[in-house]
Length: 169
Image 1 (tube, rainbow, N blue to C red):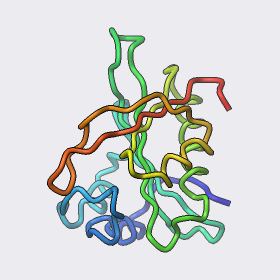
Image 2 (cartoon, rainbow, N blue to C red):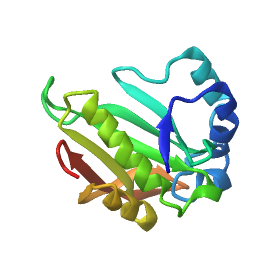
Image 3 (spheres, rainbow, N blue to C red):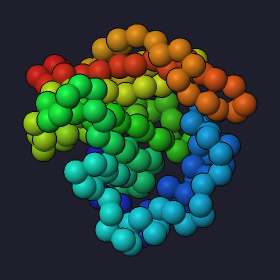
Image 4 (cartoon, one colour):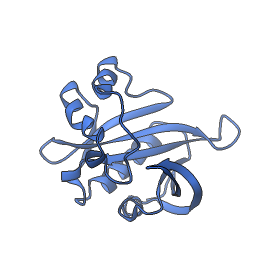
């Protein structure tokens, strides 16, 4: 069963797997990041606050298979225009096993339970069919396409936006 938990220092090595094109995955590679960034963030205790958060995704054996993160966005006038935007990364060897859909469903449930925001949204590149299916399995609804919303690998990419509203399964 897929679960979410706070990361500990020993998890940083797995999370650093995102710091390569193969480890990040074709649609998730946006260039090299500062080495050791995950360990520094874990050790600083800056994992969850009112603006953003990070949890690890673990499998049945409590092995880290990825992470989920979120950031607060403003889509309308404050204070009621805020929503959460979420992201997921699953390690290459754990992809295609349902961890992404389960983790995103659990994260949306967590965010609804711990904030008053009405909306959780996620975006993925238009060509990332696997993530689009995972979001649908997690109960998200496809809303539309943002044209040229993401720069990756030397080109602008269209993004598909999904959302889940409080009370939706």
